[in-house]
Image (cartoon, rainbow, N blue to C red; front, side, top):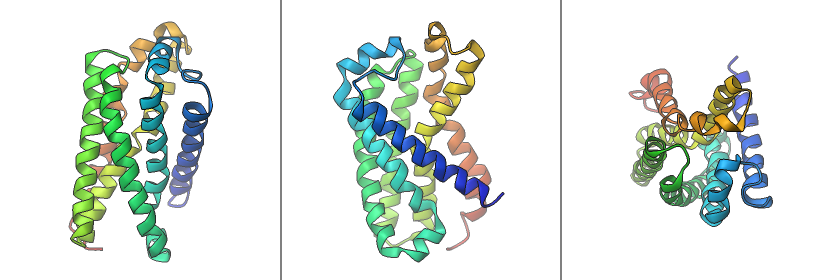
Length: 206
């Protein structure tokens, strides 16, 4: 089980990264979204592409920051990927604040996505400060929290498929399904990380 879970995460991250670049960068704006979203995607395709593209880079590069074996075996590569991760999160989160203002699903959904990006920025700053001070225990705590927020791009789609399946994937129900995702895509991630992972390592120096 210990080997299966990391393998599942790696596979999911790679698949999500490829999907993002294919659907948001390669294809025409709005090709893979619902008819309700297509207008906004065409209208704001640059900000969405930047947010999604750098978010995908963050998802992939950040995966290595939470892999202890990789950190120990490839320290130089780990540092390079960490810098890429910092930069990608900042760009994706800042553009995400703007994207959140026209997110589908109503005001509550917009607030949910806006808070996600805001906390995403604040937590990466905390990780970077700890990194600068060479406080590795604090850094690892904050980088795990931050990556839990980065992983929201994956959990959003998992929740979307799970909930939308109840409506047989009918586009007429897409809006009511999507309006639940502004908070659902990231709050459970943080709760899981805090309760089942960080609670075990928070006071253990690494």
